[in-house]
Image 1: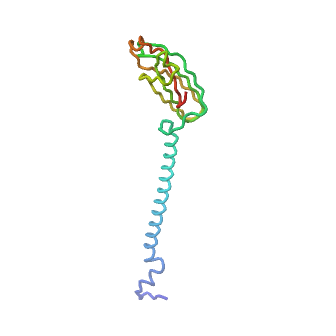
Image 2 (image 1 turned 180 degrees about the vertical axis):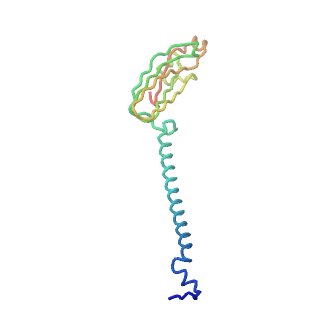
Length: 163
């Protein structure tokens, strides 16, 4: 028991006196550690989400070609105002991936003979991000009037790496 004249500070403060600031400091350090670990976990989740989104980009060099694709290529006509041979491509799919088509201007001899190469080639890659989609576009193979007069009047198509 303490009398009014006793000046024993340890007994006067009791268990809640000096120990309280130390507990608050430990509690604050614990809360900071918990918040830092939560931020670390959220950061890892964000990095993984971005990485998985980057892997699904149809324009990457290692992106897959479309497995289920329907396309129709029409026309191969010389249009001097457009700058060469023009062909129209219509592609539809429900896949995620890319559709790549090479259009070559050839002569009569080169139209069916793959051993005859040409310098008049255009490659077009179109991305598809999944879901039912249809894209239509024109491809212009640059060709001068003199090349057209020299017999470059036909188009040869290669799509997604196959004939």
